[in-house]
Length: 398
Ligand code: CTP
Image 1 (spheres, protein in one colour):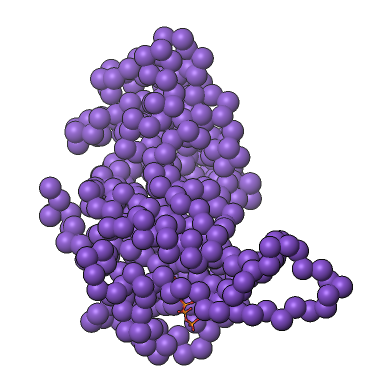
Image 2 (spheres, protein in one colour):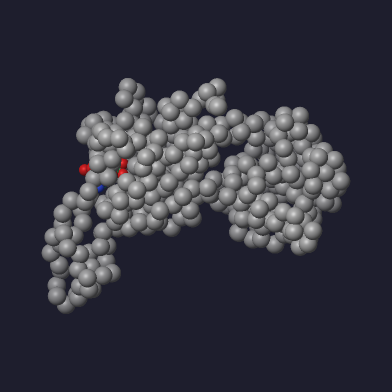
């Protein structure tokens, strides 16, 4: 793993963390920021990691041996400990002004952040907003702890104990390869069905839940193909993304991506399309158009039909506004999928397009009603369940 040590009095604890990591047989490459180097020396980190320490984006020797892009990719996990308010702000803003921030921007690997700062800095709305931004992008956090600080103030902001950071890292590695060698297909976002040259039939899906699921599966080591309708989200790290617009294109991209060990159909596919979209722009002066609509292809039902290319585990989604549970039960059987994830998309729930979700999971023999969770957390739990269903428990790893 790559350990970024940024500036702060807690940087000395990074040395203890490295000692614990090495004892746990985890290979560490350290990157020290200029501020971090005011608290610990490159030599201490080098001695403890038994690896070269990187400090300078502009070092000709470092760059010729291992360029910063390669450094950011040749790792399984990036850990920032301690993470100052400054490095989190820079990463939230997408800045790349030194080696550490450039690596954070360039990496396609999961990032775990252990913040450490004065309590007021931690509680400042700017820091809170940066933490929320990073969490939404899938960055994981460990700590901070609450307690007496170096500045004699009391409250949250202390670096998590090295043992707790080690535990978070070990949990990551224990889970990370659960889906290694497996291919999972995910659909996400809305589809758009053209009416004329400029207008489309669309819906409010943001793609967030599907994108989070794709990212969570990739974090577990799966090869993930994400077929996405038009959304305003960055491609999740480590995921192959096929961008499509219409239901027909989505089906074609999914069929092309098969075979898959599992498939998660989170997309909000349009149910209707124009029988014959108009090639030119309809003029307003012609009056309100009569829309001649026909059903779109049902991707989920099509790909759940028995056949050699049916994914091993198929998971449909149901967006419902009434009788969520009853309709979801019926929908699972009607679509022929193994599992169905239902959510209540009445506007007052804020689920469609929002950051949180409350799902009901229907499997062949269980019905579960999950609590209200961040969409990333729903995704992580679902990815764990998929790994377990495919027989990939920590004990069964090759
Ligand atoms: N789905 C699909 N192709 C479609 C419509 C839906 O693959 N043309 C999938 C969705 O990705 C989701 C599931 O079917 O996994 C259920 O979608 P939903 O919109 O809840 O149900 P519909 O089949 O559209 O039925 P209704 O709108 O009547 O509830």
